[in-house]
Image 1 (cartoon, helix red, strand yellow):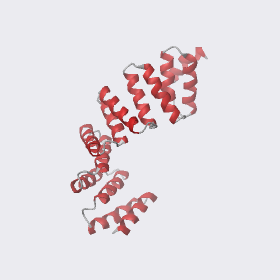
Image 2: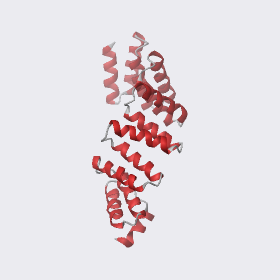
Image 3: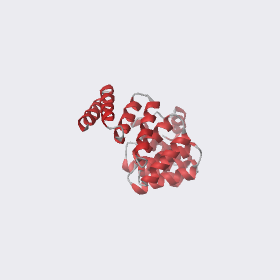
Length: 216
């Protein structure tokens, strides 16, 4: 059984998804309650865009092991991708009930709260993520975005600067800093970060670049 599991895993890593599915199915014929196989089979179906089969496999994994954090997390991701935000939120919350230190679950839950306009809840989740992992660039960036939405520009600047300390070539962080510094009338810094955003691949709004021209 373990041999088929490892063969499936290796096939999936090589991108041979059909072979991976075949080998995982062999494992399940031997042991239908092998919950990690259900999880991995769900991941492969997800890579094929077969989201109904993907979700079904994650649910089977949870039926076998209700405290399987990764299955709840993956279900959250799958439901979010389908626009089913209530279901996604429920499974991210369940993942966090099992493992309160799951950084990506905190972050993704924050993203969904932000989509719902729940800024305080989003802020709380991002803060929890960076408390667990202080060098989590994505968490600092998302925190900065919420602060900006709340009109707290100084806090937003600190968060975006922290993002760049961890990931200096983060184009969106540079761009957001450029916008904030422009709004504050600090045009040199706005130009500096705008140029960095372009350098690192951000497609900066031409109208924003036009507004910066007189200050170059």
